Length: 500
Ligand SMILES: Cc1cc2nc3c(=O)[nH]c(=O)nc-3n(C[C@H](O)[C@H](O)[C@H](O)COP(=O)(O)OP(=O)(O)OC[C@H]3O[C@@H](n4cnc5c(N)ncnc54)[C@H](O)[C@@H]3O)c2cc1C
Image 1 (spheres, rainbow, N blue to C red):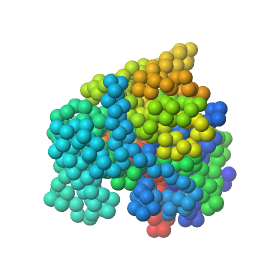
Image 2 (image 1 turned 90 degrees about the vertical axis):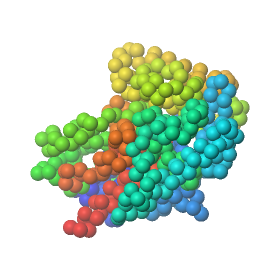
Image 3 (image 1 turned 45 degrees about the horizontal axis):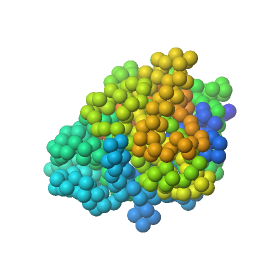
Image 4 (image 1 turned 60 degrees about the vertical axis):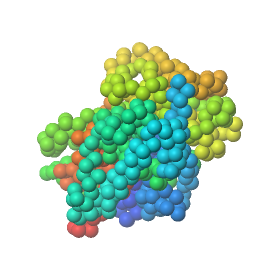
């Protein structure tokens, strides 16, 4: 296969933008992907007449053409913005509880505040205090980190310094007394992987800020359209992609990358590798042990794996309103429970009263599914470990038992669903493990405990010269962070080459 300036391992978001960013600058780049399509989580699959979205519920950081967000600007700089059509969602999310409680928050700060004030009039002052605090936090965070203040201090950024390491539940308890309101305001923990007592308030504040200010979006054609567009741009800039062909080994000599060996046994020479595979896989499986400094394993040993997911994809023979689904993003809650109970539920196989998110893309984009139909994607977070102990002969029984429980929970809120099912597919943590290659099927990389939050993440660099990372394993997870991670890795390599 010869020599390349750089090899990118994995065509998930981070791998794709790294490859496209390097090829755009004229580098000769090889992209290796084990799966037969690009995207990693950002893919789709077909059953019957439906093309199901695998992962994307709400794309963050896009903003509008008039008020572009960081992701819109990045996609423009990669040359893919005009190849895609983005669909703005009007709702932030809706919370539906089995006892009949319903609340929809629109993606607008004033409307969020007034909807909450109407439902929780006794907490009016606290609601305003919460959003003032979240916005102050986000603005200080952007000034200090995004705009890279060279001289940040506690005096300049009192809210950032005061709240960056506070668990989200402590801040909610400080401000509110109504447990239902605290539950509603913390549902976004599902996008982070840990309940509010284990994540920093920083994440909750930033999520509200980015989704309100830059609006939640979906993509026409789903996240696969985004992955395809970046792949096409990479190829048109001279890149080479090989699908159904993983990287088996990264060759390291004297502390520096020398090449990559593919699953097919081809030996490729290169001085630069960007790994979109997990750090665990990269260091423990792709590189010979004697070439990995001990300190790497010590550091990784201090981190834990995020949950995976149990997901049900349903294609219906009717439009969303026939099912009573009127919002794109619906958190389905049986009852709000203690954070420790929620955490323990994620560690069990069966589904009973877990929080779930149900997305119906057809609400914002009526053309998403074939005419007269719609689809939903319902997810609850589950750790992969217990699934790995299920004997193969019992796997299907466990999978469909959980699917039935999940369907019953959905029926409790939307009673018409069962009679309109045309297609149904289920993904367990083992499915995610198989398709992504991540240990335990972890979908959010390492867990983002307060102590491992954005301020302590391992980052794209490696002590091995020429090895870079671009994925949800080295920073925040989600589309926006991982797409940016790939572009940052590409920039680091280009800077290094320019300096040489
Ligand atoms: C069910 C679900 C719902 C989600 N919802 C949202 C959402 O609404 N909003 C949001 O922002 N984020 C969401 N996310 C998170 C988001 O999808 C991920 O954080 C992001 O896509 C991860 O991108 P990544 O770059 O880390 O690569 P990944 O998607 O993890 O892909 C890694 C790629 O590397 C490949 N690979 C691994 N090993 C090798 C090897 N040895 N050789 C070659 N290739 C290899 C894999 O095949 C895979 O294609 C969701 C995720 C899931 C699973």
